[in-house]
Image (tube, rainbow, N blue to C red; front, side):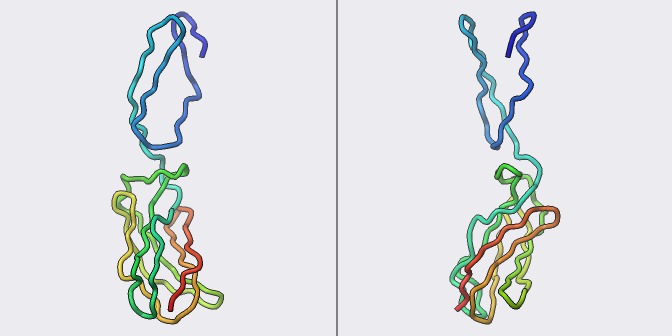
Amino acid sequence: AVAVAGVASFTALACDRAATLSLTFSSPGLRSVSQSLDVAPGPRAKLSLVAQAAGATGATAFDVQPVVAVQDSWGNTVTSDRSTVVTATLSDATSVVSLGVATAADGIARFAALAHGPAGTFSLLFAAPGLVGATQTGLEVR
């Protein structure tokens, strides 16, 4: 930035991650100045798979239940989200089966007791209204 009348203005500062940051301004011959900033996540934009389902044996709950994060467009978890309802749907080449729902708490939707009966290889689809979904492929049910 160029100083005009002793004031430097910055118009295009941006940050793409939610964190506490330190912003420092310096110029040769002058004392530098720092300011701490808390950058919050942006608005909800997408779902991201944090933990994939695993250990699927016909008609019993998956050993590892999926965990899905509600994120902004930069991949930051929206920790203030306590209401997004995420649906889990299982699909293969011939069928689509709804498995259940989980509601986000602190931006994280944790599924419990998801199971599927017939053996095969499936995709597990996660969706929420207005958000880009997430997909786990290659889920083997034995």
